[in-house]
Amino acid sequence: MNGLDPILHQPTRLTVLAFLSGCQEAEFSVVRDYCQVSDSVLSKTAASLETVGYLRARKGYVGKRPRTWLSATSPGRAALAAHLAGLQHMAAAAEAAGSAAEPGPEPGSGPDGAEG
Image (cartoon, rainbow, N blue to C red; front, side):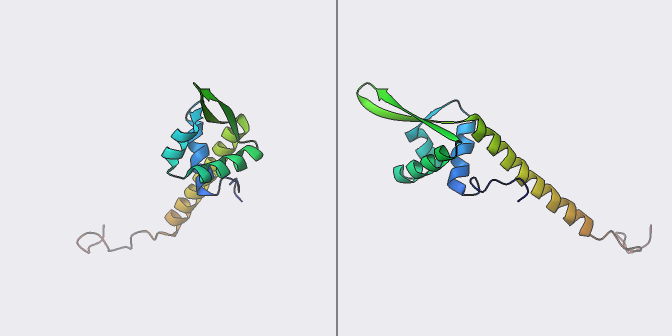
């Protein structure tokens, strides 16, 4: 399908991976707030991206509080880049098709209706 990744076709997965591609690692709550989703939605999304190898989750503690950090993997970054390139290719093809379909100006259709 023109280089589009079916995993990244879902908007929340695309948003999470795009956000994570801009940083080394982000705390779960930061990603959740940016993506404007619930903990449950982000948890399920992260699990699905981790299953295919696009995301890595790291658990640890800050003081006595458990925390989860998310990061995009190299394959995840590559998949995102290929997906975005596929979208750009589709947009360019649509633009080219639209330009080719536009009729040129008809003779005698100058601003004052005169030729030339």
